[in-house]
Image (tube, rainbow, N blue to C red; front, side, top):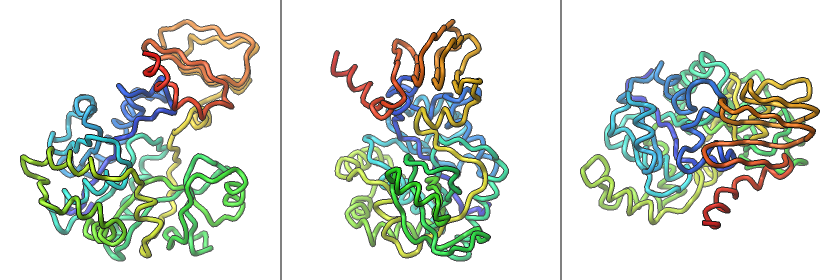
Length: 354
C-alpha cells in the first residue's frame, strides 16, 4: 500500500437492532454474534492489518468503549484510538479522523471501513481496496465500494451508477438513495443500475477536507477554529466540537452532493449484519428454516425461527413459528419476526422501567 495511506475503522455504533446480544455495554462491533470465535472489530482489524501497519490504523469509537477496544485490539497504539464523547453519525466521525490525519501528513490517503460488517472473501476484499486506492491515486475524487444486489433489500442504501456497462469495475455515481420502500427496492433490483452501499470509502484526505469545506462548512469551521488535534488539549477540543455537531451521515452530508463520486463494484461477499433478518440470511438453516447458534437448542414442530442463546444453555422450543429468541446476561427477548423493527426500542424500555 501507499506509505501515505491510513485506515480508519468506524466503531461508534450501538447496534440496538441486535439487542440484547448487542447492547450499550458491549455493542455489536465488540460481539461475536456470528460465533466465528472473534468479534466483528477484531476480524476487521486482522483483515486490514494484512496491508496496513498498526501505526497507520485508527479506530474511532465512543469514549466509553476505549477499554474494550484496547482489550480486543491491543496492537493499536493508544493515541490511534479516537474517542467520541457523543454519538454524531459518520460525517463527524470521518471528519475527526480526516483533520487529525491531515495534520500528521498533508499528503495522506484515507480508507474508511465499518467495524461490524461480514466479509466472505478476505483476499478479494483486500484486492478491491488496493484497486480503489490505485484509482484514487491516479484520478482523485471520492470513491465508495458498492455490492451487486442479490435481492430487493429495504435495509440497505443504494448507489446508482451512471454507466450501464456492467463490465466496468469503477463507474461514476449518479444518485444515492437511503433505505427504499419495498416497491422502490424491487425497481432498483430489477433495473441493474444500482449497487448496495457498503459504507467503505477511499480518498485523498485533502480532497475530503475540501468537500467538507464546500458542503459542510459549519463542521469544517469547528475543526479549524483554535484546533487542538494532536496536542494535549485534543480531548477537551473534541468534547467542544462534538457538542456543536449535527447528527448526519457522510452520505447525506457529502456523497449525495459531491460532483466527484465514483463507485467500485466489490466482489467479496458482504453483509452489514444490521438486523436479525440479515443474521438469519447468513446462517445455516435446518429443514424448517430455523437458525440457531447452539447445538444445545432443540426445536420441535417449529419453523422460521432465529435463536441466539448462551452456548451453555439447554433450550427446547416447541410449536412456534417466526420468532426471534435471544438471550444475553440478564435479558431474554422473544419477539415475532414481523415486529423486528421494534427491537431497537427494547433497551430503552428497560431503562425507563428502572
